[in-house]
Amino acid sequence: MDYPALFQAEAEALLAAATKDLDAPVPSCPGWDNRRLLSHVGRLLDSTVTHLPRGVVDPPPRVERPPAENDALAGYFRRGVAGTLAAFRDLDPAAPAWNFTLEPKVAGFWRRRLAHETQIHAWDAAGAIGETREFDPAFAADGIDEALRVLLPAARAAGLSKPGDGTAHIHLTDTPGEWMISLNGGTVDVTEGHHKGDAGLRGPAGQVLLALWGRVPFDAQGLNAFGDQDLLVALRPT
Image (tube, rainbow, N blue to C red):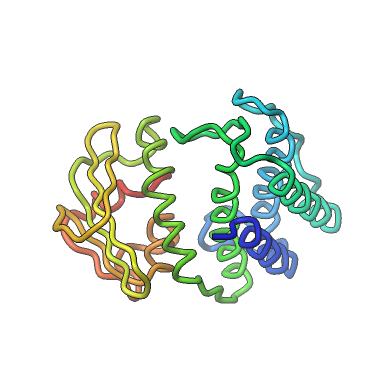
């Protein structure tokens, strides 16, 4: 997948939706409004632009708080997008760079991560202004794979995800995608293919992705959940 292009498209969609009403509450992020959502992602991009060129795997320093005024915040976000795209273009994906997961500490990690970060938050911002943003099934399926193989193991190892041991099966209905996830203590094992687990989730990729990120319940429209529902909750990386 062309992650830089996907990131740019999702970031632009997020900015366009959020700036229609920066004070609109975000139903999928209780307690947040579009201003805080745009600030959150903008600050992540500012941090990315700061730490990727360092060529080291040490955690980056904190960046300054984003500006609050409408035009200044939008400009801050645009600069973060432009700087991130420049870093993706100019840096070797294999160059050393910090990340918070168990994956290799290389700059290329952030291409996929930020594409999916903005994908979810573009959906959040659209919902805040009463719009619906559809997911590309293949892109959403890749987001599910990242959540299960990359983010969940890191969260599980750090004790940040909900507890639960057992097996769960996810089966997508609108694009190829099946995963068998085994949770055991602090470890996560993910394989592809069809198997029966202690819990199961079946549905279109976009809805499954939203359920894994806690944006919709596991029994939302289009989804079929089976077995141990607490185990499905344990699949959420946050």
